[in-house]
Length: 353
Image 1 (cartoon, rainbow, N blue to C red):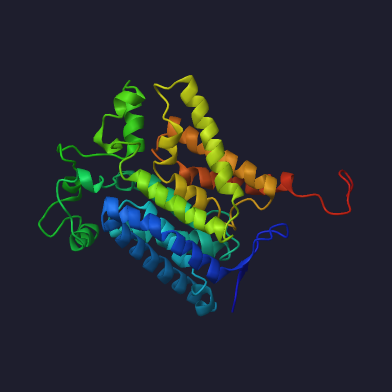
Image 2 (image 1 turned 90 degrees about the horizontal axis):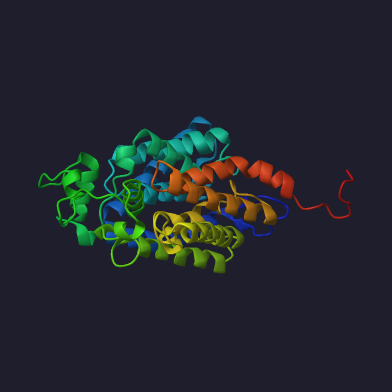
């Protein structure tokens, strides 16, 4: 049984759902590989755990609702939701955090709304916000890039850390998160925000080893890999280019204006592009055909609003990254955006019912 995603009669990019989901999953592989390379096997383990919990949650809930399990499981939507949660969770986060997020995304955000195509919010980002608000310490404790690690961690030790909180040799997560100077490190976004709040300039903050030689050690390559995957999706016509391009253009405008006004307290556009989940959000999350705007003008407004929220939250908010919060707020605004950007019906004049 085939399912088709078509958000609107005016959206002519339609694809068989399983094929579309598989393509998006494959396009995310470069980004996952980059995360594994720079932040260890834990990223892959979290993705596998998240997918497993998401699929099991969907099977369980579908059986309770007496639905056709095989046809809905094989559309790969639960797999994609799990994948997006897995790449968003820190590589050394305990397994139960991934479990809570995956189950919440499928059961509460997706199935309780009626299943695929009926959910108002992006399930993965709703789950991420739940985890971030409920477990801020675990969800903001990313492992430093491998070049800054004191201890080399094998695949087995990553697995054991996630399951128990300790390596086989007895090192804790906090010990693993220390850099070569014996200091527990934060992400580049969090480090920059903290430094500026302490009165340092952007240039003074950039001396931290977490920024590397360019903008964001490790993260610039992760974002580049997700950018590559996103370009593949556009080339395959799996997603509309309007949303990611509009998002990146608006983010450039907002960050450039702020940088021009106050370069000492505002990061450059490239730092925003290559830090956190910018490219993942632009190409894999904002483009969700169910929760995104369905009109051409609406998608531009939707992406511009997301870019503005991302910049404002990163600049003034209490959380280092802002993609998930921006996406959920924009999801809430989609019905209103679509209402006022709906194309005029052929044969009708403006103002005539």
